[in-house]
Length: 385
Ligand code: MG
Image (tube, rainbow, N blue to C red; front, side):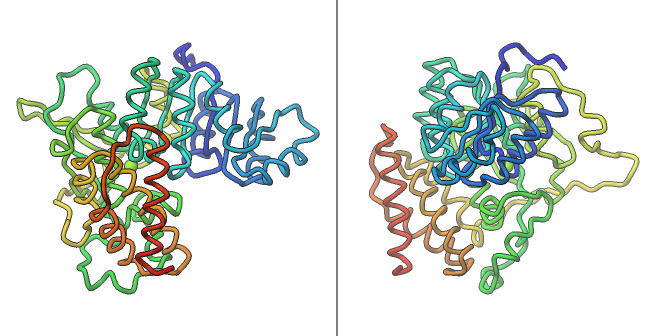
């Protein structure tokens, strides 16, 4: 298909992860070749992608892995870049950047893209959680356009087309694998239990965040930045089927929703083909209304899943508190996946560290990275590691 000229050269950052791999499927479906691929440390995975998709440039954040990739691709013309600078260069020099990196590691490529006025299809929500003010301000200065790939925000964006400003945003939430659980049920949960998401297949970090509802909390912050809405005008509703991806309410009481089978590739495709819709037949599964279907909605249990309201509080406190929330959570999830703390320990420690943190302004990337580091340290102190 003919994409908007602006789309131009495309770089995929985080190409070996779940959303990155789906982005490459979408590019193939649209008949597009990525100009650059960047990933964290998976040299073998990136080599395979390079041979299949033939980019001009490949970059790995991990320097040793980049040296390995260079040897692996010695028989090709592909230029191999190394380290944070190498990854950032792929984001700075492409016309369009799909950023699907995981965690605060995605912030630097996001800044590289917006500083250079690029079109940014953003799947890395942590860019906005940790430094939303800086990212949005820089994008406004350079004219960089940010298109949301996160399914809820992508849905809201689709609902907002050609309409009045909304009075409320309603984010849907699958409820995660522990929907309906009470506090006492959360004691003996293993990483394996928590990685089993009912409707979406995703990477490990975001699957754990979905199980604690931290992910939904982050998405409230993400929506506040993307759509300039105060956190108290953003509601979360549990919707087990993951068919309605989010909703928008208007002042006359009308609610618009976007529905589809749960498939991130639709979100990625819309972010790349906007303002048009690409043909998804035979690629994206379609809803079948000839079969009976139920759509349920219920409020989340915030007394059990306390990280959800904690995110709204963090947004209201502002400054580096959202950054601290993110850093504390990234570290706690890491410890849980390593089997060193319990599932409940994630919520308890993140809540304790975030609520007791002494706030300061998030007015530079230096301040953001310092808060991130301090939050991680405080989690280790909490567990006496
Ligand atoms: Mg989402």
